[in-house]
Length: 384
Image (tube, rainbow, N blue to C red; front, side):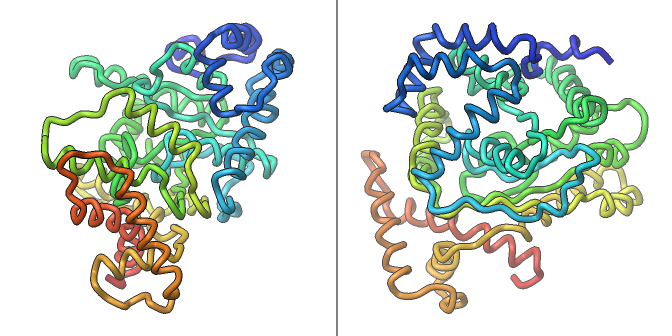
C-alpha cells in the first residue's frame, strides 16, 4: 500500500523535514510562540540548532524532548510512569488513553518512550486545533497525523474509513505505534469514557473479518494519565456554567489557544502515566454477543483497564469525601492537606470571570473533576 494515499493526513516524510523547518523559522507566528514558551531563547542559536535536523526523530529527540522535560520541571513536582512490562518491543500498539492536556499527554508519552529506548508514537490531533498554518507544519514535524473534524455527514464515512485505513497501515505495515485519546476532546469532568464512534471508526478497515478481529489487529494498550492538579480546571468549570446557563454556548478558537497555553505553563503537581495490558485476550468472548452489543463491550474493556490504572493523590480522596460528605478516605490525607485543597478550590474559583458567578455550582464541578477518577476506580473494583 502506497503511503502517498495518506499524504493529506500523515506526518511529514523525513525528506520534507529540512524544508519545513526553514518555513517555520521565517514564520512570525512560530517565532512569537517559541519566545513565549522559552522567553530566554537566543533566536539565532535556536535557528542554527533547528537547521541541523534531518529527520523527525532528530527533531523529537533533540528539540521536543528537552523542551517538554524543561516545561515539566517548571510546572510539575514529578513525572513518573509504570507498566512498561506490558509494552512489546516486537510489535506496534495502539495506545488509547484518557485525555487531560491538549499538548502534554502525547508529549510526555513520547519523551517517556524515547527515554526507555522505544520508538515514539504517531499522534492523532484534531484539525480544529490547527488555528495557524505554522501549527500544522509543527505537529506534522512531531509525528502527528490529522483527524478531520467538522466535515459534512456525507463526507464523514469516507473520512472515517480513510483514518481507519491509515491507523491500521501505520501499526501493521509501517510498524509504528499510535496514540489516540479515547474520545474527541477532553472529559471536562474526568469521567473518562471511550466513545463508541471511535471504535466503530477503528473497525472500518480492513474490509474483511469481523468487528472484533479488526480491533484485535491494533494490539490496543489502554493507558491511564493522572495529573494531580489540572491547571485548566477553572476554565472547565466556567464552561460548565456557561453551557448550563446557555445550552447554545460554544467555545471559540481563542478558548482552545488559552487552554493550550494554561495547560502547558500551569502547575500540575505530580504526573503519572501507567500502561495497562493488551486487551486482545479479553476480546474473543465479545464475538459471542449480538453485533449491536459488541462496540459497547469493547469500550467497557478499555474503560475498565484505564479506570483500574489511575494514580491517586490526596486531592482525589479529599474531593471524594467532600463531595459525598463522608470520611471514607480520611486516612489518605491529613488536616493540612485538606485545608490546602480547600484553599486551592477557592483560588481557582476566584479566577473565574463570570457576571452571574454561581460559586456553589462551580465548586461542585471542581469536586467532581477531582473525585470521578476515584469513583470509577471503585466501580471497576466492585467496591462502589
